[in-house]
Image (cartoon, rainbow, N blue to C red):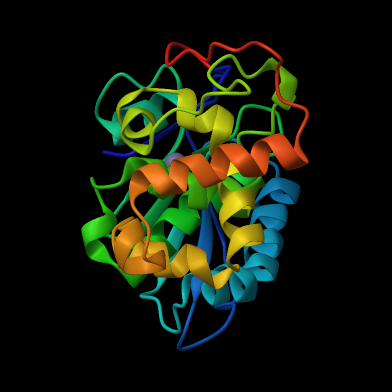
Length: 246
Ligand SMILES: [Zn+2]
């Protein structure tokens, strides 16, 4: 089960309504938005509108032309959300069901559309390459964070795991539970600025193989990322980067 970690929880009570709009783009990327529990109609409408707007960009970036129909559940009922997730959902704000092509996003009083778009992007990645599920987590999250801007971009000078001489390795980012959520924006930006937006899709297609995608080793990729950050960003002055919490 793949999760998107963030902050607060809110309770809701059970009821169901269906945001019965017609499919957004029949044939290639249809989806519907379904609310569970108390979710304002304005929220489901915003989720639908924002995903609809993002679809052409996300599909183009990832080189996907066709998707199975997707159902986006927006949960106002936190207990039901946790039950659907099936494990401890304390820090979980969204997840996908890859078998059923479902997005689940928890509404807790704040706009939920970016969380839904983050999870939706995961499904688009799966449509490009089913092998990406459970592999190259650094890339899996980078793509979703870059496309949704969720979690929000941190102040880069506060990133403890990046310094003037150090970036976390791709393997470290895949293994650490939360660092990728802090640096995914910068990694996605580096890929897009150095190669192209479509390079995101190329990487997904190769399950994050930098050799197959760009002809360079992961270590070369990491050093290029560091050089990009030094040139373009105000990263912290410390000479020691940590692979602990970023
Ligand atoms: Zn995610």
